[in-house]
Length: 278
Image 1 (cartoon, rainbow, N blue to C red):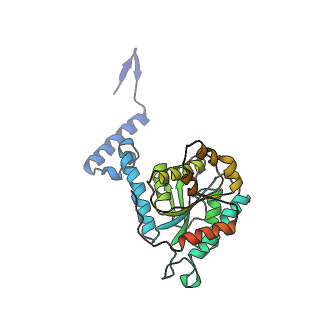
Image 2: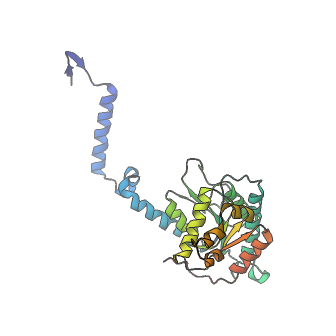
Image 3: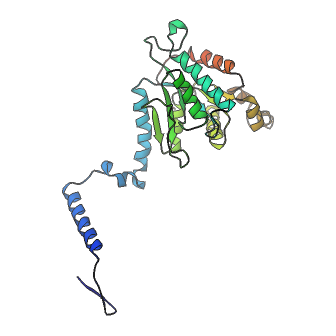
């Protein structure tokens, strides 16, 4: 084939001819052995499959957690920027360790394990660095299984190393990740953090306030001085933006022993039932 442009002969390059032949062969193969859409990475990664991707982030974690008997979690929120040597990170690690030690101890010895000795309560974090890593680290120190629910972010490329193998779950959609934070949660600890931590805290408070979460779900804010400076809670009440009863949703503490006692007192009498959602 030859094309004449302004009197000049332009021949297809060898690369063009090869590409055309490869394309023809590929089309013939697809026609002879068509790939179903669910097995087509390009289609599954496109706009039309968004609803399917969201559904997989609901179903896959359910299978991963429930197949391992995990229906009860204690969630640790906090900044990814906190150094592991910071006092807040050390507190997160110690609380997670104590909680996990109790959770893996036989009930005959005063622990929170099931009668058959299996672990019922699990530390759950966002899977990243900082407070999250410290909390997973503490659970791993106690040789307890623990969970990391990660999210695809350019500045958090991978899950931290202390998450139990097989219990690190990576999400694309924040909404589905938030669902799996709250759905099996039996208590939430919130350590100092920024926008992401505030987002998680206030979303949970809103869900409780509006009745979308009906279970008893204590929220403990670690480092009382930080949280009192961060938000003028009493001003919100005095201005009528929240009710006096809304402040009762929160507990403030800077005492590891106090937090440990609060958690165990709440968890030890909870009946083990299937999580439910409205």
